[in-house]
Length: 508
Image 1 (cartoon, rainbow, N blue to C red):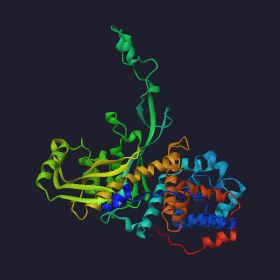
Image 2: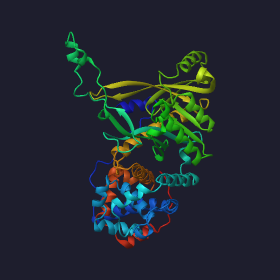
Image 3: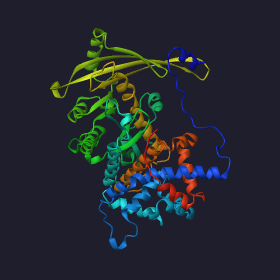
Image 4: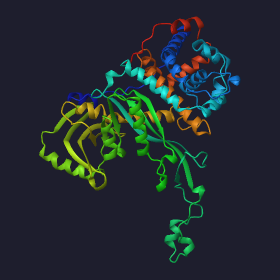
């Protein structure tokens, strides 16, 4: 009833897509075999279409192993490492257990003849421990560059720019300091020898020992890995992993006893981004942490556009000027419907923002707010009206013509990187698993995981597989493919014939 009412009001309620809740679509074994063959070969055709150039770039990595003792080439181990994340296997132990079954190895060899004999997972670990693992990420960048050069993402640009979202996240935490790069923080848990607050309050005359603030020992610290991620975040929901910047303790301000932080890492990450894509038009999508002058100046100096979340308690002088000018500039407003939401925009262009010591630096910014409301049905079956407010700082002036694209299709889709990180943490990619007690090897596994996520994302949004993903769901699809490779479903001649067909990557 609510959807019918919204349609009469000119709103456009879209039913959220859900995966099929039906029995199997296959009626015979032959139909199931055809479905499994299509799913496996189409996914592998996407991977194999990108592998030649990717392996060519990976082959430039200096192999420091003793040539006389090398049994598996570097590129073979890279393929092996990528596939363990493509099949969403959670640890080195599980890789050894699950990827060494004879039937699985036989089926995998049909697709990748070079993988006729799979290595032990520790062999890959020893390689990642000793090589320059940053070159793996450089290979990922080369893959993205080729896709951009072939204009695969042209339909999803924002103001003719590639939307790149940047966000930080904790990868894992430890109680022991196993390498010098780890960041540290004090534990929040209460010490066993710390007095209870109720005891302190109830005691009228506590002695000095009871009220003394406890000192912290090494056991009171927690050590953790923190990563700043940069992803292409398109308006159709396709999120492509791009760059990872690991925060390291010694990258901080050691003279002032400060460890590395997200804003320092942001500077390093954007320098690398500019190095890899010197002429690419970029629109950065950032959260409220980056609403400050130095960050925005870095973007302007690199000729990048940006949309940054502006929180209510940030940049008080900007908010004051916005509120005062908004009343005067009555023409700077726009009302529209987006899905089931009624939106009212207000903006003020050309606000002078002063920053730095004694406000010695100035830049011009543009601020836009969006007040919206929509209706939902609560658990009691009642229709409830909900409201929300959003505000952004824009690098470019806001107009009636670009407000929907910059705000709804650009800034609002910053959620894509947050969803991507959650997927990598909780939906099969083992983001929070260390894989190795070694900093370099851990980073190497991280980069291989991000490469595999790129391949799986390309498969998910490809025209050839979108129907299968709709039927099984995302994780269900990868389980379907993996189970196919563990059974006698595939025949060599059929797999070879399908893999040899002409291939063109097209998105739905």
